[in-house]
Image (cartoon, rainbow, N blue to C red; front, side, top):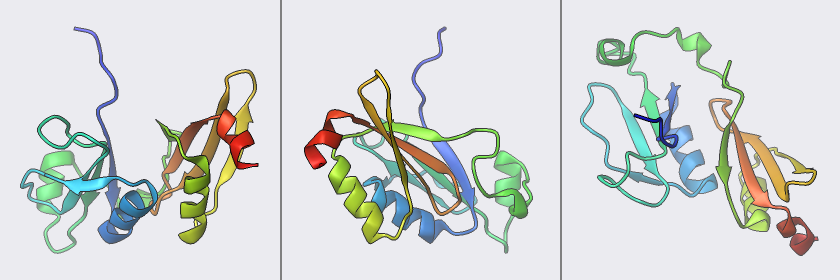
Length: 148
């Protein structure tokens, strides 16, 4: 059986509300169905809802009053290690609407970096989520000329 497309990525966080705000207000995802796990969290969708999709980002919360549910399901992690993408460098999404995204990031006070990839017709925007996970958005390079 061949491996298919990337299904989702998960972020373990101490601040679910900050992740919810980032992924809904900046990325434009919608919060949706999440199974009744014995630990807090949320599933964020980009388009197709459950059951057609399992969401694109799973936010996994840590309940300091009941850490056993998460430990039993996913194992234990030191809360001090929950920053950044560590050995995974970044998560990338295809996107359109470069000027709108620049405006959204500016309104939210999120610093970002841009570059155009030579010969690929691709313009990249990089920024970090509240857990310091690096997000890359790939826009058609033609949108750079349109917004100039």
